[in-house]
Image 1: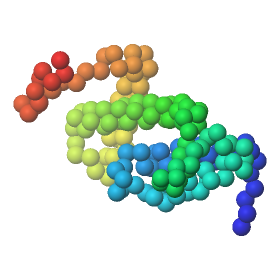
Image 2: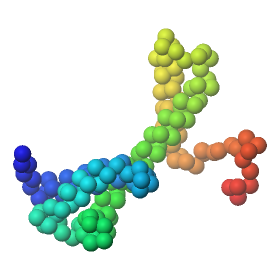
Image 3: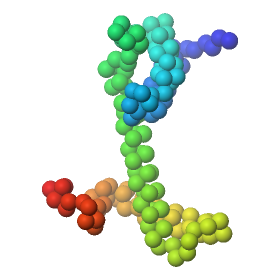
Image 4: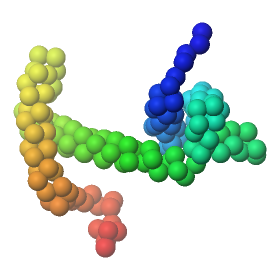
Length: 155
């Protein structure tokens, strides 16, 4: 099978491969990295010169792989920052709302009342969304109540 790409399509493919491997492997220690994704990224990068994108990758003779250059990193960095920020706020809102809904929900959550619980959680999420949109993290506080946490750690 053969797939043809325009120069513009190949650039998008490079970004997709870079972003995908970043999400999958960036926080893994070397022994836990999913090498099939790294191998695919390297394979795609091996065609950069053919598409006129040589300035986006360097070849490491030591590791026998193509590595993104600083130029390519900078171009893709804003997409990663945007993604990270969206994930942070979505997770923060979701987890705080789930925690609060569990505290507020008077019954044990089960199949019969799950939709009622979700409705409450979504209502709380809307409040957190509005707060964060209006004030960002300004009013978010962490209250260390556990005796296991030293209160002066954050000074």
